[in-house]
Image (cartoon, rainbow, N blue to C red):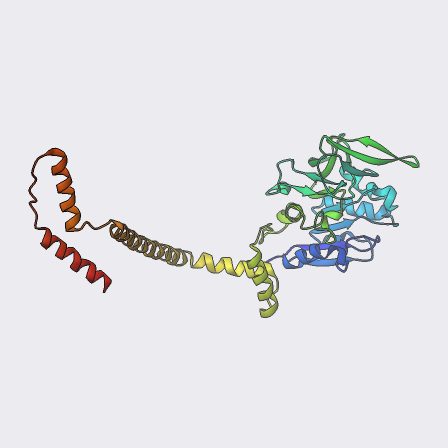
Length: 376
C-alpha cells in the first residue's frame, strides 16, 4: 500500500485558511485531488507525538490569538526532528493581525515585516498586486514563470547563524527595483522604497524544513487575477508542498503537472462517476497501464501515423493528376482552318510556298472524337 503525505492545518489560532473556507476552495480542492491525507489541529500544539503524525503543518496567518511559549518550543522541536512547516502571513504582519507568529519564525532566522508591499511598475490592476518574474533557481520555482501577490508583507532575514546551528536558508523571491511598502513606524504608517526585499524564504533546519511566505492571498479563490489560479501561483504552491514533504515520503513523489483542460474535466467526471479515491490514483493507474503496454501502444500509434501518411500521399497524387488534366483541358484546340490561315499568312509575308506534311482531316477527326468522349 502506498504511503500518502499527511498535512495538518492549524485551526487553533483563528487561522484564515481552513478546509471549510469558501475563499480558499481552489486550494483545498487541490489538496483533496492530489491525494493528501488532511487533518485539523484544533486543540493547539500540545504534544510532540501528535505533531509528528503530520508530514507537514500549515500555520496560516493567525488573527487575534497568540502562540504560547510551549507551542513555539514544540514546533521548533518538531522541525528539528524532521517535520516541515509552512508559515503564512499577510499584509501588516503580526501588528495588523494581532498575533506573534514572528516569535516562532525567528527560530528559523526569518521574520514577517509589519508592512504591505507595492510595486509602481510591475503589477496587475493595483500596485498592491505586484507581479514577479525573477526567481532563485530552486525546486520551488521549477516551471514557474510569473506569479502575483496581493496584500502581502515582506520578510526580514537574520544573517547571523551560530556555529552550533544546523541551518541553511535560501531567499526564493525578492521584490523588484520599483517596489515600495507601507510600514508601521510606531503608531503611523510610512512609505519607503524596498528594492530587492525578501518575499519567500526556504529553510532547512536540522532534519526539517520551513517555508515562509508573507502572502495568504496566493491561496485565494476570490480573485482570478491574484489568487490560486492566477499566473503560475498554483504551480508555485504545488512546488512548495513538494519540497516540504518529498523526502519524507518513501513510496510516492509529489509532482506539479499541467493537465489539458478537457482531460482534467474528464478526470473529474470519472472520479465522481466511478468512485475513484482521487486524481492521483487515476493517473497512477493510467501510467501503469501505459508502462505495461508501452511497446504495443507505440507500435499501434506508429502504424496509424504511417497509414495516415499513405492515405495523404495517395490523395496528393490523385490531386496532382486531376490538376494536370484540368490544365491540359484549358489549352485551346486548333482547328484545320486556323492552321491553313497561318500557313497562308506566312506565304504572303515571305513570298514562299509551304507544304503541310500532316493529314489535317485525320488529326481533326481524332480531336473531335476525343472531345466527344469527354463530353459523354
